[in-house]
Image 1 (cartoon, rainbow, N blue to C red):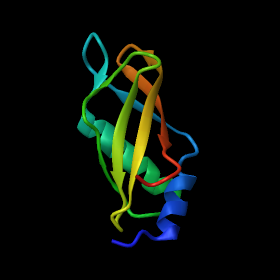
Image 2 (cartoon, rainbow, N blue to C red; image 1 turned 90 degrees about the vertical axis):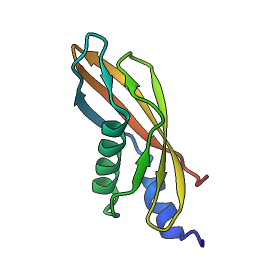
Image 3 (tube, helix red, strand yellow; image 1 turned 60 degrees about the horizontal axis):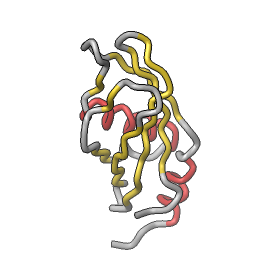
Image 4 (cartoon, one colour; image 1 turned 120 degrees about the vertical axis):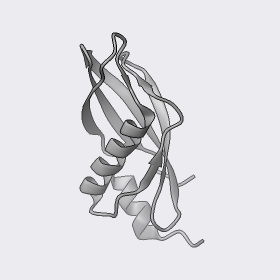
Length: 106
């Protein structure tokens, strides 16, 4: 499938860091992988004005500052990018993390 340069440009622009705030409920804060993927997709769609991409994450995000999770974003044209979520703070069950999309398609 042909990779459109406008899709590459849009998702690359989304590489500017976005913050997400979510709530977990266990003693060790964890955010289910489905929630992380959905929140990342929604924030990136809002940032870029593009349709909500398909985002998948391999595991739950552990609420420990500095912890990273690599997810996969697939745009509507089939272009795929890596996405890194990195925990910036944890306050009780609230996990705050940054989102960074790779600059180049994978």
